[in-house]
Length: 261
Length: 261
Image (cartoon, rainbow over all chains, first blue to last red; front, side):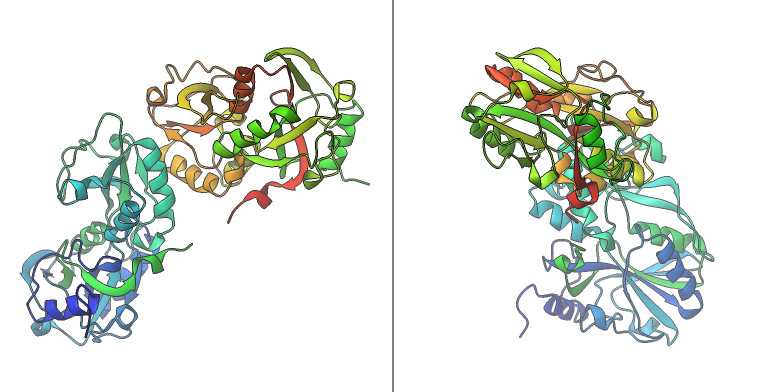
């Protein structure tokens, strides 16, 4: 028997429709992943996009062959059922949200699992830092920047970032902690003046919820897993599937296993 | 024969009075040290001050026994002759500057060698970062802060910091690089608003020279080796000797050897 809150047990509940909520805070200690599912014909371009933009698109695993719904590196996974909510895109536009993709599965689909900020937020909290979006109980604020990604085939766009405010000493500590985790976005890419990366108002995020930034704090910005979703929309692919934001694939991989030192 | 610019050859020239200038940029690749020389009666309190305040006072080596002028861990050194310029303090006040301390040497003197920012500046430049005080050809600007050191016996005072301006991405990179070198002040202790650590005007340093900070840059602050000199002055010891700022002990230890990873 799986233990309560084990990733395998949670995925089983998700596959059976017993858990339909988001996965924030679930299965603590284990890696959760952003999911992108594409036809084989676009998969190589997307793989190259990830390789060229590793901070917003840190690839942790992908299908062994087209049509294979397993991700054996991450656990006993059926990607068609084990994510609580999926987004189906047609011609680059969100068409529908569903709770399984069995009826949509095709022999040419390739799955990509990308690292997610939940892993480094856990490491920050474990070190005693306050992660504002968690203490306020909201989604992290995310912003479009003017930092261009390196394009690959149809995949292109500016980097999306998430923001967490810290006092300077904690920001420095956050750089140290997150540097250990390159496969979940790694060190921040900016801190201080938001205008320098094209953000007009740090109180008005493009995605997620606003959080308070105190006078003695700096906004600290990390490359964000929404970036590949924007690149996917820009590519206007005939057909693509992703997870719904916050409704992640919960894996058997431990967060601590991602630390490079 | 020593090679040109080898630390041993440079120390020989210094001991013979052939090199009397500062040591900035000399013997590239090798560790230079701040020097503090105290009577044995105060040495334990000072050692404890360094242990309690490792960022401003990173101890690299000390005498094996009182009265011993060697520092064998750092090379074939006679501390009485191998520093280009010394400061002699009496009752906590600078009394005189001299080029050797043979006539002042006593059987109860203990030498402490502390890490110096030259080592991490070399690592920053090797990574392609511009270190402003070096590109402007001036001394690094240093500031008294309102951050108290942990006191030990008579040794007490606020931390002194050095400041180098960087764009945010380079500041983040500087945190990563300097984290590898804890024995030469390690990661910055603050960045951004100088007022938060008690600095009124970043254009008016308390020691060293001002450097330009561009609008798109953050001032980044490191714990500084002037901190123990201030603590020494505050302690009002009857007798103490230090190097003169910029006139360091050049050692046989390689900077790369200080990297913890």
